[in-house]
Length: 253
Image 1 (cartoon, helix red, strand yellow):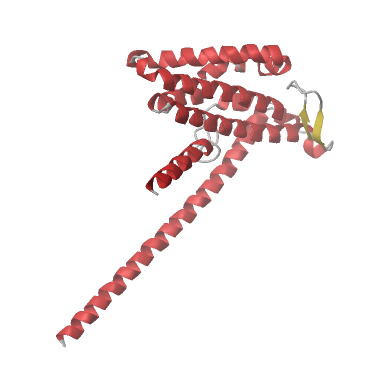
Image 2 (cartoon, one colour):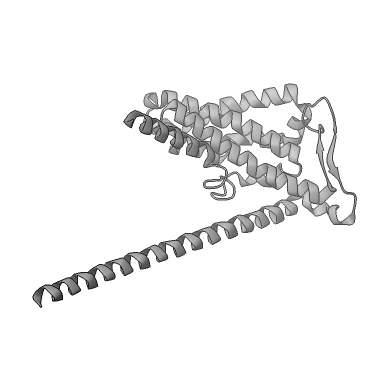
């Protein structure tokens, strides 16, 4: 029984480790990491998805390698070592993207090699992978990278839809077909500013406001529940005190 409880707790911990990057510890909406690609490559949903896939590849594998060799890296050269590991995987994904998705490679441009200095990847290597085992480090990397991709795609979806009134597919990714999910050619969804950097700031700011609004509301609700619990404990304690006083008075009588 104890083993089953321990196993279920471990599974729950792994699940929380995997899902924390979506909302609770989202790299963009919570920690504001990776804002440069969030502004530069999210003009369309496809480019956002493409960058997300590359970050997943680099973050998961770099976390695994750091977790494997962490005990052999001297403290004095930890950060340079992590950068070498990350840059190796960035070089690999850059070559693969250029070979198999040349349009995506051309669209992302300099932001592929700039993955090396993405604070999210270096931060997870230093704060998590260097202190945990391989499996947990891989799960952490996957969860945080998926959360990063989720945020990029949310920004890219809004920007592309507001700029063109459509969500295209097969333009940058090497898909066997090309088209669009929706296509609303009206003045309401043809705002060119959303395809540029200013549109990125507007969308990210709006999504951050919405996210923080929900978080503040959640915190207020939790605080209200906590206050109610405290008041209930005080009421119960007061009732017990009165009961003891009555019993004491009855005993003396």
